[in-house]
Image (cartoon, rainbow, N blue to C red; front, side, top):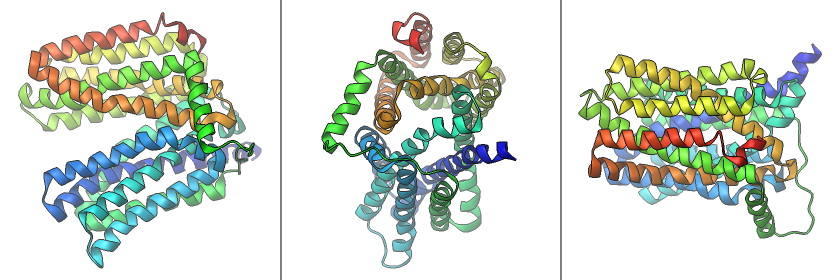
Length: 399
């Protein structure tokens, strides 16, 4: 019974984060459809999605100091309740006074802006609840990431099913409810943590201290550069290259859902496997091998294989991708002191996310300039080279 009590906060954190992430994924499905349904404008839909992703970077860079000052649990609760209010205001205005486009964009921006510190705060809670549960940091971090991956898979189809059953606007009420549930669970089931003691420093001083800490820590810089590079290549190849591939080569746009579904399911399975056995594996060799397997998938697409072979390769690459966040996340937790955790984690994730739109632009330009096959072979080769470089990167030797 004592063991169950010590693991209860971990279970609560996993459920809260999973429900909150699923809510975010539902919003990514529902909000564009709501814009199209109410405005009929593809350009306005694009504008709305831009203001969905922009706040994530801004809040990661500048919101971490707030997380440290308020405390992790309080920030998580406040952020989820604020996100719930922003999402619920959309169908409320639509059903009463009517909602103007600028109001919709403002609410979407505010919801995303406030959601990012909540994610950072729940991530910052991981080391303490994992230690309470008696798990190694590698296993606990992998379990946390597995929950996120599963929620990412579950959220979109749940949103689609609810749209068919209730309609687009009503699903936004359900989406708001996911954030309320997460807030209540964190407030009730997780122990309170102490906010950063006030030392008279200004908010800007706290921000500068966070940037300075990350910049001076060579392993953290190496992790940021590695993740940013991989994210940019993922964006170019997965978000631009694969859609073009399934349309032009396979002549089956529906195949994109199969490919992404198989790789996503594989990643969730890989995360769970690492959570179960990861503590027995050496970190750096596991990191290198997994990165190489993941990178080989995109290089393999350049051979234009048939769909069944591509799905098998994608599943293997997905399983290999599963442990990566667990390994790198555990290394981050070990190097970042508790009083700096909100700022450092927010900065690291924001810098990694900044590479995603750039990669998409480069991928689209390369496909038009040199062709689809050459793009996959060149960027896939660069992906493999980056993966192999992690074996000799001096900054990563200390993880």
